[in-house]
Amino acid sequence: MILITGGAGFIGSNFVLHLLNNEAVSEKILVLDNLTYAGNMSNLSAISSNANFNFEKCDINNALALKEIIRRYKPRAVIHFAAESHVDRSIKGPSKFIETNITGTFNLLEASYEYFLTLDNGTNNTKKSGAQITKKQFRFLHVSTDEVYGSLEPNEPGFSENHPYKPNSPYAASKASSDFLVRAWNKTYNLPTLISNCSNNFGPYQFPEKLIPLVILNAMDHHAIPIYGDGKQIRDWLYVEDHCRALFLILDKGVIGETYNIGGNCEFQNIELVKKICLILNDLLPLKDSAKITQYHELIQFIDDRPGHDKRYAVDNQKLKNAFSWKPRETLFSGLKKTVQWYIDNLDWVKSIKNNSYKSWMKENYSKSFKKGENESS
Ligand SMILES: NC(=O)c1ccc[n+]([C@@H]2O[C@H](COP(=O)([O-])OP(=O)(O)OC[C@H]3O[C@@H](n4cnc5c(N)ncnc54)[C@H](O)[C@@H]3O)[C@@H](O)[C@H]2O)c1
Image 1: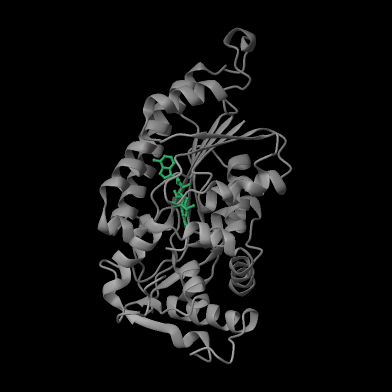
Image 2 (image 1 turned 180 degrees about the vertical axis):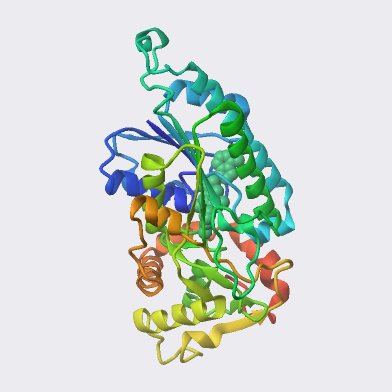
């Protein structure tokens, strides 16, 4: 049994689908998720009838419930995706980020450690403890972000695992804190932990508050496409499936106590990225003659920059490549094409996501940036 927190969110659900479809994993999967606005059971509908799939609705802030679930399911690994994950929301309301990302991770570490202590040492008393797995087999993989390292100058090398932590947003600071907790539970209590810090992901099932799906969906609706500041912020993009393959390798082969940075070696300015998406849309969803625009990029609008907006992220993924011969399979263009096509093909999913709370968030975050009428229903 592998326990996956946040498995109904963007990367978590892609990871669950990847495990059950590609890695031929024959063991059971337990998704533990509180189904916040970002969690969606329909992300998992393709495997919900799979006999190996299990689900528990649980808040990682509920320490007692977490302990009970871990004791009951006896996982051989915990993979921790559950988090508040949107930088803009962390600026407007940081407390939820402190609660879930820091205290929630602490609760999960405590529950995992309490359970870990009940596991067999690998000698011959397995029957006595009733546990199926041993301490040697157990792993806790914490899924984190490159944003903990802060922002790079234009010519600086990418973030290596030894780069100092300099988080700039409440989101990044809360993830940095959670990384330190995970490290401490390894160093102090010998909990067999692993940490991964990944660059910006994109792909199917990403909640449309994040840049790429926001651009695709606003463009499809012929609404303004908001770009923060001058749009010259640089991100290192990775297709989500490539992230999932890396996580599976780290879980399987990673050295306990180590951190692995994951990135696509794929740096692009936001504005370049958005223009690429517009070109792909021109091709995959040609505009009708009656449309008010002739090319999707005409919808681009520059808006006031996000406070503390990091200028550049780039990841040095050499350690991961050397250790596991991993490399991304998708280029930015091939991954974007798949992603745009997925949103075009999954309008029912999009419709179910664009509920009232999504609409009010979009209004709160962007309405002051646009002229009246330009983005009202997005
Ligand atoms: N999206 C990226 O580009 C990216 C890059 C690197 C690392 N990460 C990390 O990967 C993880 C997953 O990111 P994502 O983009 O899939 O996030 P997401 O916001 O799409 O999903 C988060 C999931 O966690 C669940 N969740 C939130 N609070 C919870 C709580 N208190 N209890 C239980 N479940 C809760 C949500 O319901 C949702 O299913 C996060 O830890 C994030 O920091 C994301």
